[in-house]
Length: 110
Length: 114
Image 1 (cartoon, chains in turn red, green):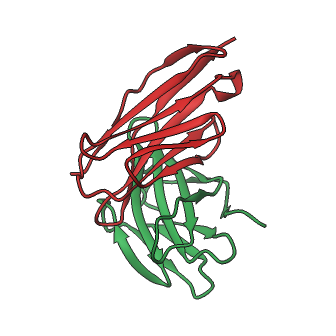
Image 2 (image 1 turned 180 degrees about the vertical axis):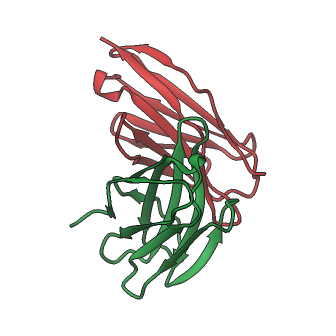
């Protein structure tokens, strides 16, 4: 059973600080990796995708991928109260299925 | 550009009934995937359709089925409803085909089985 693991949180981070969210996956043949943000009562929204080892930056968000260690992380710089949400890690495996982790609840403290 | 449209938004059904949910993907998107979301299990993959063919299937019983039409619209059917089927059902569309594409999700259908 392929798995995507995330710490459920809540992760509390002061406003303006860096929030660091982590995810590990079991399928070594996984091809692509995604981070989604889900506000309470809303559907998930894609915020980052990454396919190669290393870092990918988009505004205040940086996704990091390490295939050898089978982990992917998301850094949010200058955290804002509006970043408070559940962050879902998703992995496309070699069978092309996209499997989601259960999410990490992030709370930005004003 | 219109997003992913799911209908209906809310449904209340009785155990043993069946239900059909509908999803219209973003124009030009040929892949539609369905997920069940519950507080305890998170997002669980049901199936994916691409160009009217089921391309992938999750670990759900045969009571859960789907199909995709030539205009890429998709329907999901659940027969003989059980209380445990109460969940948010999310449809997601993507370009599909070759390449790595993320999903765009619809607003979901909230199904309550009583």
